[in-house]
Length: 292
Image (cartoon, rainbow, N blue to C red; front, side):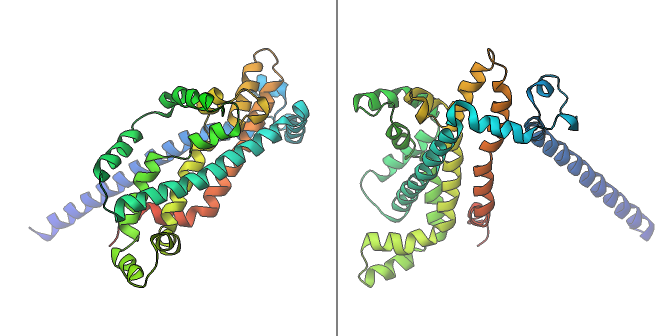
């Protein structure tokens, strides 16, 4: 092959690579814009009063009323929104913490121990991953009602503690993060199994625990159908169910629409803060096992 032909081939390869890079960037930019448009609309709509919101004048700076919307939100029904917010934080943070601990412990046991029925039990966990939560809501309500837990916080707490997908993730993390040799060395030193798990295994599984915690936190915070089935007392509602009741009432009382919009915007804050604070853990956790 002559030098001229080599140069032509190289030029075509560079042009193809450049065209592919431009196409990829355009697709990624379009997908990013598509994903961010609802958030952008929410940010703009949260600053508008009722009149501007219904007239679709979201870019009109003259109708800026963010402070007024926040005050109206906090004053509505004697500050019930703050009660819903506190309920959601309680359900999500405590439920995700205990749920992540249970999932991490279960995944650790499935990976590091041999016991009768292990394969069958793990198969049930994998099958449970494929079952939608809405299918289990009614049976959970019937059980909670029989136990006298319906319309209590316990009905929401207990139902979210077991996360099959979290167990699966935790087992994968245990395989990649916890060497069996370390556990054997601890047993030789006379450490109990609980001591080994809490002092050695759980520390090594830190990125996995945080990853499961964040998945669980997001799922509980956005959970809607389970509280809808379990709860009838408005004071026990999480923020998702509370905003739903306002949105339903807005068809009759339009003044609820700005409250729903600003309430939805403020509801994003805990999730954003949690991901920003814990990102170094879950980012390392998601890449576990990719490099040996």
